[in-house]
Image 1 (cartoon, rainbow, N blue to C red):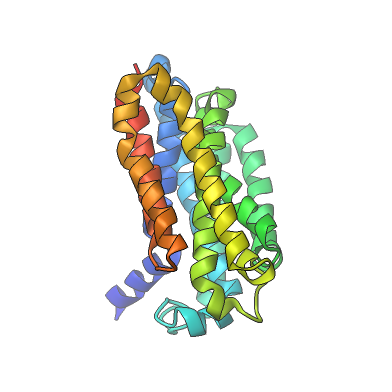
Image 2: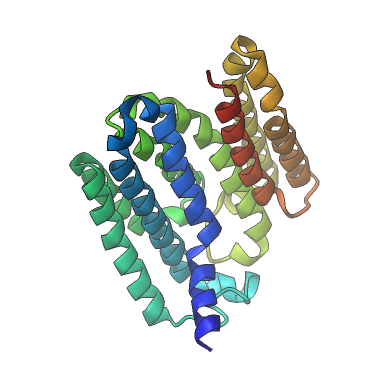
Length: 274
């Protein structure tokens, strides 16, 4: 029973997403010049990465709490609608994770702790309100999901160096969020005002395609300047194209493909950067 309960909590927290956030912090720190700072940056980067994990857990749990009625129809096997985690326990997990996220990032650098307070407030506003505001909610998540790169740069004292990564990642996250809304549209009808419901499937697909195209175009300067990056980024580009094609054909699975594309893009930057 205990093992099943722990498994349910991890499922509620979306642990792969939480680990991806932590990797984004480490990547952002590396991009901002962590290697030039030596061992002294290990502690702030580690605290920022752990804080990003906690904040991601907070967002995921609040999201599921707000969506429990929809999930009872669309995702009945999830931890909350299935009853494997109680609503009270989920609220406690979210509260503890939010406090831990702010505390850990403040331990990395006080300014980052202040940023995290604003992030927690935005996440809290997202689940009950912004999430139901169509493209505004999609853009909110796209920015929030891209912030781990900024956290990494901030942890090494160079947040401005990581802003470029945030700008590149945001369109891909936007495409993924729209893809998720497209898949959930039948269950969301009457409960949420997502882009496919308010503007129609065609408009949502058009914006998804534009966001994916913007992401690919933002990679072009690196590809033209560094042939090695162009070769390393081909898997990410292929996955983005495949994800768009999957969504256009009305098939499921494109959100996961977009996520894999982000991982591949990060790998391309790792391989190709001097």
